Length: 322
Image (tube, rainbow, N blue to C red; front, side):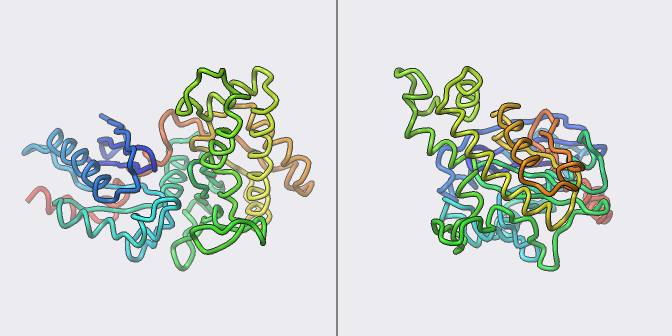
């Protein structure tokens, strides 16, 4: 058995996987104060220990723990460089921190790289060359090239969310200006929607009831403000999408993350912008669609990463059985 954990800015999800990649049990815990590193790690520890107690027996062992986290992840150090909007998560060595408290092999993976692993093994494309775009509280891309995850020499490839689309735009926490995720993350979409909440939803609706899904439903019902917000988000996302495809010429694009709650109305906007703005040879050959994995791709990818870690390091099995 292995454990897979997905850390997100608003929740932590853990699951037990067998070595065939089958999910046996899962649990999701909401996190309302993610900025507080110590409190979030305590929640994570409690969840991991709960799953270890379920699986540990003389016949069964947890062989590895895979954790998919927002990044950038500095893989050589197993360090989270930073998570935008959460200063408490800067230069955090999560593996070292957890290894001191858990008797288990741990692998830290960038959430988008975990996602592309899941799409490779479990998704609907199963191609050798594809990109997984996460449009969530942040923006990132997991890249599969010639059937291998493209990590780059410095092992931090795919940070498309921190590429600039406006040289004089607002400053990002990464130090750059006009970063893509400042324009088309779901954080930005929801922040803008809050300003027009009473134009989108009934007056009695509470602010926390404003979600990506409720914006999409309002747009589908003809609400012009909601449609304008989704179209603006899709427009900016398309800029980042075309920039990356112009560099990599990858024909298969999978989009995942919270933006999937926006549904086909948002996806069709992206496709329309792409057909209009992309060069003809790309517009005619690139396929864009939502992930079809029922749960978070990054969550499943965390389990797959843990399985791969065991396969590539068979001594883990012998240590546990001895």
